[in-house]
Image (tube, rainbow, N blue to C red; front, top):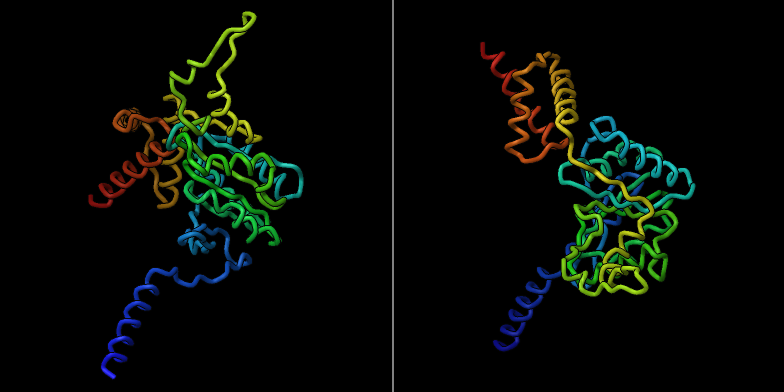
Length: 296
């Protein structure tokens, strides 16, 4: 009798430990009320989890990248309206608005049926499972992978390449893939990659290593580049950010040489002239000036 009781206690402990290892049950995403979801891996599988809140950035909020906005917005509208459209690689310097642009698309086009599924690089091998969950939905999906880069030999590289190629793992008709990266070719290139170059008939041919590394980015129909701002572009964005923040508070601040000098020093400290740096300075400057004015 005592042995049976001890065995029951052991079984309870084992079941309790196993229960803690199992993923918590997740509700099926209701896309009529959910604008964005993220893929969460659990052991060998995973599931889509609704993201209850999304960033409120709109296309109008993004300053200094009008050409990039137009390219990406046009492609997205083609997709939403049922016309041919491309997968997109948004690449360039950090802080230049790549990720914010994708999120702004959702806020602008969600009423037209756009939805976003975010997936991490380490979960790209789950793309077929994600496609199976969204392909019958009456919405248009952007599968978004942020800040993507690969090292040689990573398994997600070949899966994504296969998906973009339209092979066995091809994305369904209601899904496009948008990727942001600091690297144009998504994978590092080294000096020794050129060792395999050779000359034949006077022609210099790139090594197969370089061709293989370039082959993934080649499969994106659109490359949209984001560069750091010139000083004039940066100051123009700073001025617009300050004007918008002041408008939110029903106040005005002068734009003069003092502000310009402070903004330039800020960009030097950050070692970057971009939209993020401009907005961060504007918040700092406006907050300080308004608080000082109220204290007088």
